[in-house]
Length: 457
Length: 77
Image (cartoon, rainbow over all chains, first blue to last red; front, side, top):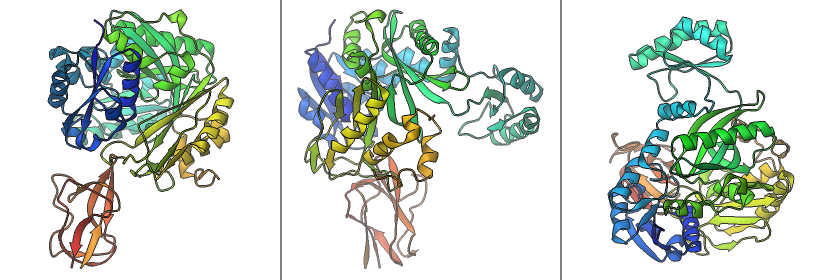
């Protein structure tokens, strides 16, 4: 059953993105909006729009009964959750299906299973995907020493009952482990009334590499290559690339194949992402989690493969088998996406929701700007600060970085502060140019004053 | 009388968290730099600080309500 009317349960740039994909397939669109979002671009572009509640997201975009009722009343036969909000909420997926509509994403059970860290790790292990080496559950101090010997130092000692970073110790060698394990046990006992410990290998300065997959829900899946997302601030990705650079062919193949194996093992339906930590020095990768939704950084994959991932999600949700076979999915050139947030990077990234006084967007070969801006638009202060994503595609990584810098210099968004100066400084940085970075690289780089020291600022 | 105005648009809160007492009550002494409330803007909480000393009169904007930049949040005597 192909989708005829799609309800978009999200806002901002992803809502615009989903409307465009739906329109390309001839699907009618109904856009959800909060009282603070009546003027947003997606409302203007959709065939219809429905208010789902007041400005605070908890009362509108996150209100499951309200969103489901609005979709049902609008006569929608499918709901796209976008990313964030209810995108990975199993109760929402279930409520949509219980109301007789299609949830554009995996089954509620899959969301639940992959959202549980332990269950996801078990599923990965069963599918043969490498996980971060560690103890199988709780161990004694003596066992800790032998496990550490086996997996290699440094190791992280964690409280089994812990959370929020409490009860964690890092040991560089056996002597340190022997000294720290009893301390960790005592701290865990005092904090949680449970002195149980477990052990995990510390991956030093890992890169974050993730594989995009598509599944049809019946056990067939394909991969669309990988993305490099190591430039992060406060665990938020700021700059993303496809493909990852300097990855040995065998490693890339192993990562992509493992992702497909996991997607097939859980009968994954729709677009999903398998995230890995990559230890470049050891050339080893480890599963960390699966994201059961379309991601902010999906455009870089679209640029290198030429696929429309959101349109594919809609076709699969409408009952089609996988629209592409693995041998039809190719990787050409290099793509980079940077996130433009309404923040002042020179003032501790203070949010800056203003009025879009002017807007001039560069156009040309290999350029794409996913956004929800128009001149005169007042950015509401109630939601996250992402304004849009500049995406470039060029034959080589070097050319892509050059193109990104040129494009950002030509992009003009008047009336707002944005993170453009950060991206211009990154594009000019020798470390970024050399691909010499990891997930722990950006924050010390900022702390060292690299942003304020450049002309770009 | 001195007004304390919002530096940013967002949601104004009188309390550091829902279960705590308000930052200030009528009659409290206010020193320069005292926090009198929070503005939530784009998922970030910004402390609103007094730029002058005085005696707290009352909040002018209700707790947990949307405010615009320049709105009066609180009054001091």
